[in-house]
Image 1 (cartoon, protein in one colour):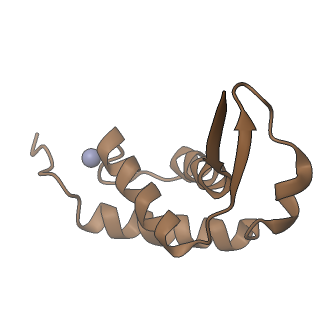
Image 2 (cartoon, rainbow, N blue to C red):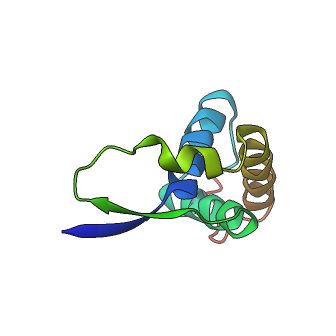
Length: 93
Ligand SMILES: [Zn+2]
């Protein structure tokens, strides 16, 4: 069983988790997080690799990754965009 994985997605997810731990968005529901991921991933180069199910990432892709600073910058930008203009109505409570 093989999976195509985008390592950039893993890095972006990690950067988003870090960002959300330190920042409060107007909304950080699953939908908004997915929107942020999509926005950030569209700006970053994809790094696909084939993985056997359950396999831990090996180091071959790490050299080809966009650098962390750039990933975080794009995540912050995407988070601000989604936060300013969420794709669903916010609760007014
Ligand atoms: Zn939301």
